[in-house]
Image (cartoon, rainbow, N blue to C red; front, side):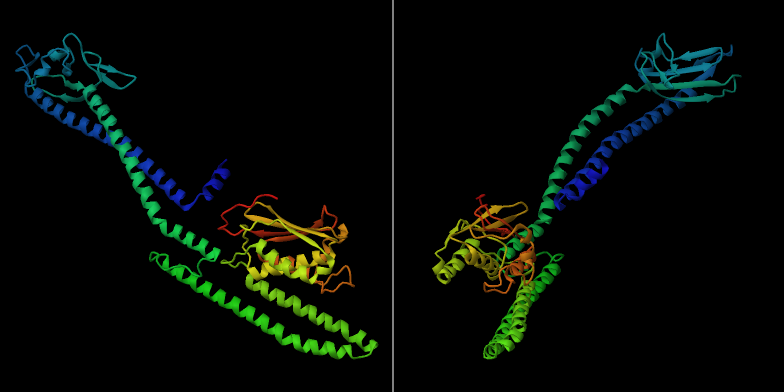
Length: 455
């Protein structure tokens, strides 16, 4: 149970953590105030009452005398009339061995002790606040024990009234402070919410950097993020240019070598043609990896698979017109994935090219929503298919099942690595149409307004 509670605490947002801390702190302070304040006031009132009783003690000691018979007597009545009113709640009692005196307010009762509670009670059995003192009179041989007490109930009643009013005030104070602290927390965390919104816009491609209107404490972080984004975009663009330049620079020499090899004898061509093909495969493979390295974890990207498929299909329909294939595009136009447009075109282009090569008459493409903000784009054909035991091996670099069909054997491997670079996945299965079922899982764009339906 403690481990589970700790796990829940770790999952709380900053706002909820601050609110929880404020709630715990306020609750502790309010409870402490509600308990400590009445206790302190009660102690103060008791001390003041005992101070008043000590004045009565001095007055009583000043009026205490002995007569000619050696008996104790009061020369005059005490100034407070409550000592003379029966059951008034203010009492005095003198115990001098064989002689006992008491105030008229006790009437026919005495101040008694309650052993279990260690308290004294008055004429009506009410608890008393009292003081005691032992006096020694020069004319009297025995010590004189004097007790003066006053009813504690009025003080208790005052404290109870104080508590009820205090808890109302503290309750209002608790609610008010919690509201104020909640507003303060909401206002203080507003820059983080703004940063989150700017990051969403950045990821959606609506802006290329974060704006600078942030508090002083966050501004350095924003500046560093902007510098990092600028540096990343520069590196990405430079890598793409270098990859393109390298591709164009090597294309002409390889073409010249192929033409020269074609003019050679069959024996010499059989020796030199495979190395040239291997060189071309290595160039295609590493250029694709260079493009993927620049695309990994890119923020401001989004593209439409439906539009991409339409563009690719229009080109392949002309290229493979003799095969009379039908492509059914069931992708929704509102569907957006967090993939750079050229990379998505390359992945879908490789998959559709395989379908166009091997399908008998039908190619179907649709999507299936997944969890964790992903979507699976499915491409099926009615071609001869791939044996189940070879489905995983064809995704490896350079593997081709049919050497008679043109190709480098890099297409599916490129799709696999590019999907992985975008935190996605690529798998092959056997289609219900009889051919291959290619499943490309990609992250949805965060600003997709319409959630794609399951096809």
